[in-house]
Every structure is written in C-alpha cells, then in structure tokens.
Image (cartoon, rainbow, N blue to C red; front, side, top):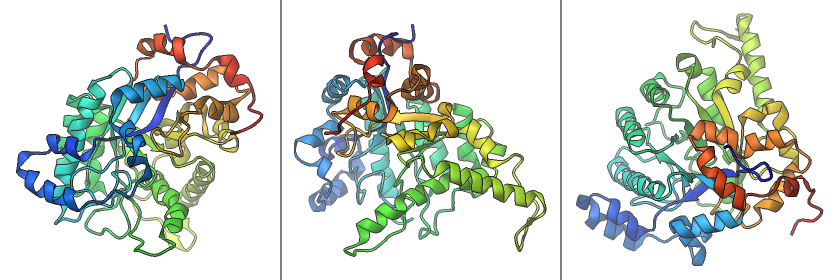
Length: 389
C-alpha cells in the first residue's frame, strides 16, 4: 500500500523545530552548566516566531503533529530553528564559530543534536531529523556524522562557508573529502538550507536586513557550483545534495552557465584563462544535478512551479516551512491549489511524497493510513484557487 487513490500523502521537506533554553540545558554536558546559565541570563531573543504562543510549535510534539495533520501534512523533515546554548542567533543563520568559540558552540550544537534524536524518536515514522556539524574540525564532523547514523537521524545539515571566515576552508577544498566519503558510505544526504551560515557579517546598519534578503539566496546557491565544479561528485558519485528553501528560478540559468563554462574548458581555454590539469570534471555539470542533487522547493509560487518540468520532476520536494510565519500553515491546501491545480496526479505524488521518501527514508506504507484520513483529496488540489486570503 502506497497511499489512498483519492488523497495525496503530503510530506514537508522543510520544517523547523528546536528546544527552549531550559530543555537544551538538560542535553548539555554538566561541565558547561554554569557558563550556560550566565550566557542565558544575557541572551535576548529577537525572533517573532520564537515568542508568545507560537514558540511552542518548535518543541511541542503533539501540537506539531495535530496542527500539521489538520493542515493535510503527515510527515516532516526537521531543520533547526531555536537558539541552542552559546549560539549568537538561530541555528540556520548563525555564523560559523571562531576557533576560540568553537568548543562552546560545539557543545551547544551537540545539545541540539541529542535533543533532536529524542524529538524524532517520539514519532519516528513522521519525522526525519537533520543533524548538524561544524566545519572547523573535519575529523570531529566525521565522527558526528557516524553518530547521527547510529542514532537514526536522516541527514546532515551542511553549513555554508562565508567569505569572511578564512579560518574555515571553502566547501570545494579537498580537506572535506573524509566528510563526503562518510556521508556517501552511510547514505546520509547532505542538505544545505538558505541562510545556512554562508553569509558574510553585514554589520549593524538600518539597511542590513535588506542586504540579507537580497543576497541570502546567492550565498546559499554557491554550494551547488562549489561541489559540482570542484569534482566532489566525481570522487563521490553516490553523494546526495539537497538545496532547501532557496527558490527555483535560479536553477536553470545556473546549470546553463555551468555547462557553458565546462564546454569552454573542454577547448582548453576559459576566455583569457587557462585550464590547469585537474580543473575539468568528467561530465557536464547538469548531468551531476540530474543524479546527485534535489531541490527542496518550499511553498513555490505558480511561476516557480512552472519551471519544475524543465528542472526535472524527480528532483523536486515540496515544503511548508512550518513553524515559520511565512510558511503555508494553516493554509497548505490553498497553497497547493494555487501552485499545482491541473497538474498530473502522478507528478504531484512524486513532488509531495515519493521523491522526499526516497532520499530521507520515509516509509510511505506506514504513512498511508494517516494520509488516507487527513491528506487533501486529488480533486481538491486539482481545483484552481480563485482568490488568496
């Protein structure tokens, strides 16, 4: 059984969760408790979705399950959201630690990963958790990845590398080969989320947020060409890369540009630049995309969805961005109708569940009874949305 013939199984490939400070303290090694208490006393939370009643969506498991089921969603890929011990801000956007700060931040990151194991374990069929690593110490990151697999986590959240953190090597550096090798061996997809600490420090200016919004996509997108053009997929052909909440309009132009660069290099020159030995990948960049890369296309607009056929239906995951305010909850059905009305059912089943399950390991047969009860109907999603509230 793979689901109801009348209803869709909906899995969100982009949801966010995390513990509150009191709970994180329980997962923190006792040697850090005094320092954590001092840090916690100074920290002020700037995030709206981590305040008031809405903040409990991040850690109240029963609330999440019931709200998402009411919204038609039966399972989720869990990204971080809250602020763990010693982090300067939310996990997805926090800058990389300096060498001096690394031990404290690593302790906080481990506290979150341990909490995540228990959070996923409370409803393992409906949650796939992404553990985190820092790139300051590759050997430590490899050990963490092996621990994640042992604990049942479904993937690795890969931080970006900002241009103003010279103490951390760029993602294309061969120093990370042991990390890619471990992820390939353990069949743990590497996922890179928009804003994932690859942004430079903008400083404190009135226009800082607008610069962040303008550039966050670019700095997230860089993971694609950094890993592809550096030959990572040549050396690790079974490595899986997922790019989440980065939009989709940029993908086809970037693939076209990368292929053009590769074609020029095949001729021995790149404009006025030479092509040193070891610069060429074995295949065109777009070929690696079709085999190694997936796109977590969170709550796409109709225009974005229109590009999915050219990108490749088997490369696309849908995501709700729960528990963020800009996500689709509690109007997921309306969002799906706006983007996908009139689409072939078999394509939507792949985008809504099949593709996600194949990469992150969800069991569609286990989810089928709940989907048959709460999933949106095929007829409903096929009906165009006339107005948007």
